[in-house]
Image 1 (cartoon, rainbow, N blue to C red):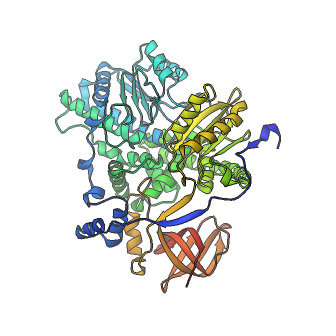
Image 2: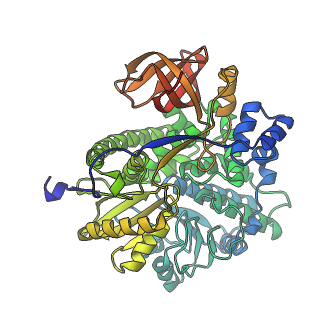
Image 3: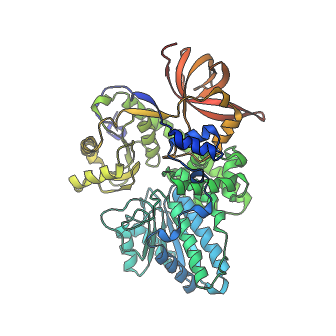
Length: 593
């Protein structure tokens, strides 16, 4: 492979991470208490294993959300925005180019426009709202000085960042230099210094007591809009209970929260559950309706899976390959025809993204097949032909397969390479990269992120040096045993619950990061198996005398007659008939009788 098509990798020699199947502990007292409160026995055990002890903890409504007042800086933000509305300022939102950023931007635009209309004469006729999304290939991430310049040329008089800004020291300074105030709304971890913004709302900033540190960027923006509505009421611009119903934005909050893979703590679960409820009732924006339609998914049966793996990737594809304004416009339009047109474009981009990813993934897997995992704590990949908008997905795929913190790089401009990393439990990725930066000043040009995902920029000539430093730092930070991959399951499922009702019940719940979807573990007999679609296994299995259909995706290896398998319950719909099926996640030959 020549220099212009070079794939570099960590040291090594071959294989994948070994997998150990484990079973979660179910606190029986908590499970019994939940059952006594009317929770289905299967669901009671699942919830208890995830730390839930009371029914209210997973059934909370909007009244149970944490109050906005606990977010540091939110009152300053609300006053800044209200003053801008009264003074006739042009407010410009600077959005990130992923699904969280797109939904946060749409939430801000929709809420601000609705509030401006609602306060009537209290808003100056000159007040307006617009947005900018940095071209990731030209400007990189966040509020940079060139983006400030673009916004100023657009007539911006108040900048609002969504899902970015906490690391934009230079960008905020550039805005301050021309008298352009900045409101930073973000959820990423701050660096050693904060930008000198007019106001900052970020649950992870120093001194913020907001209990939910996992709030996504869209969630932060939703809270800021709640605070702005309260400020408008306090000023007498709205009745005490007046103003737009901001609950109408929860469909967007749910999508951004799940797609950004933030931890689904109780507060985030409430936000997602309320959004799902609206979507299932058909009370969603036209853009999301069109995205469900183009994907062939029914909104009435919308589940967390659809938000993270159907809608999210189509919105993300715009930011990865083209211009995220396509996605934002899809979320902003109220015209069904326009929404359908934009959704089709997003669907086409997602297909293109999948094709690019497949080629990159094949190249990466060919290299990592030669890695000796006993000698490597990390995987660092670079290929001069790769697309920088897709390296994060490739890093995630390799991380899942090899169970190693993985960073994939693609070429940028002027001899730079841009990387995206994904981590494993036990390693805070941003902190690891920060430590590399401190030990090797000048090696990393820019970086940011959080515990499980991060982005960074290097010079192409420094990839090998970074790989070595990253490997050393991770070996220091990881606890013994963290590199051993373990799949946590919920143990066996009684055949009496192996039915459509149970599958429907589980599908309706909110599952996701840090609140994992149920995964059962049983010994099964394989009665028949065949390949469908060229790469998927369709199976007929038997569980304790009960026959059931199953699927294993992207699996060509024949199964033995008896297996021990981790599986999910799924609802399969074919020709209008719904049935329960198993989705095999992992299997190993069964032992014993």
